[in-house]
Length: 584
Image 1 (cartoon, helix red, strand yellow):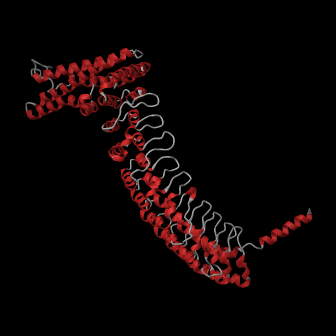
Image 2 (tube, helix red, strand yellow; image 1 turned 90 degrees about the vertical axis):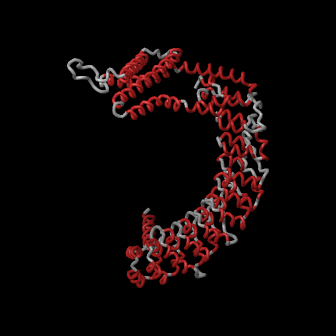
Image 3 (cartoon, one colour; image 1 turned 180 degrees about the horizontal axis):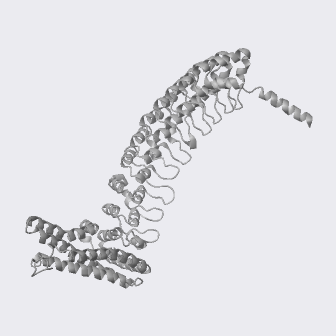
């Protein structure tokens, strides 16, 4: 036991003797060449000693960017240039990673000595060489110097499978990428199966993509681990210039189908990239249009599902794609089935305007596009659902009775659903209505005691309104009283509302709506006649203008409140059926 202890102690002592002297460490840290030279004169080999992290004094000085110290210590011990620390870093690597570009450039000239040139190729613990780090940190001039000094640096990939060329393309450094392309055996791969061309595509760099296609055209057919090729990335991102470069060099790329089974035309449809689709069809007029996986959707199915109306219209007016209009997917659904399912009137109009549309196609469940509406009860109370139903009736009048029955059936189902929520619906409506009714009651009540013109102070008619004999004033009083009474009635109806009775809810909404409209009109009338009474004797034109403006207010309110319905009426013309809007 004693022998083992003494052996361990002696080993530790000898190991500590190899550590760098504290004085030398401080000299390297602060760039004190004079102190370093003084210590080296007594023991030249002390310059070879390292810190526990494996750093020599040249490493320390490189990390802190002391150029003069580095040159002085190299002059004394040139072998320090090839020493690596525990992270496998040479002094050159340490300088680059610390951002001291000028120092790194100076050291690089020293490494050009044939005896030291192999040290330039050293890779750190992450597998990155000095060129990886120079490009990653954006030191473009240094990177070009490294490529010229040691082209073999371009052949290395790090632990993430990143080549210097891939990093340069990702950083959009065209000059560096072009220099690396000139090195015949330079690596071009990236992580996750990607390559330099895919990196150029991501940046939309058509110029670099063109040069890559000239020197390494096979990269265009390589897919990453997700099955994404350079062309699929360009199409998905809408990079028409890049897509043009790829297709001009090899038009056959447009006929390939990515691993996920979706053709490039469907990629364009998904994002609505019209220009890319046009470029694709220019080079590949019969490019694939149907997915080979899952539901086997066509590009038209994708455009409809993603609400890309403009792209859908483009597909429908393209001669070679007319056949897509009635094509079924694996579930037997056409694009019209999907458009109705999405309750998208604009899309339905676009499809129904096509001469070849067939509205009677059955899917695998025996459902026509019109009857898809029966499965969308949740949307039955929306304008879109009702507009789509009217559009389907106009497209095939023979189905009018069937669709009317569908509407009646759906209305019945919607009513059943509403009965379950009668209490919450009534509570919501009464809360909002009573708030407005109380507000109008308060305003009209206050107006009755702050009459326009004020009261008379004459002894014979004291307390009588001054304007009492004027017609406008009498109209003011009548309309004010009517507004207060009707709004007061609405407020009390809210109190006696039976929250759990659906029939009462329907009656309640109808009655209170009429009373509130009456109160609204009466209030605006009271306001205009009250101002007219005061202004007419002095500013008759202004009094008339105010009356006209206030008279138009209820009409404008009605028009704005029902504007979506009016627009629907204008769009559909004779096909519009107000009875179908009962549920809205």
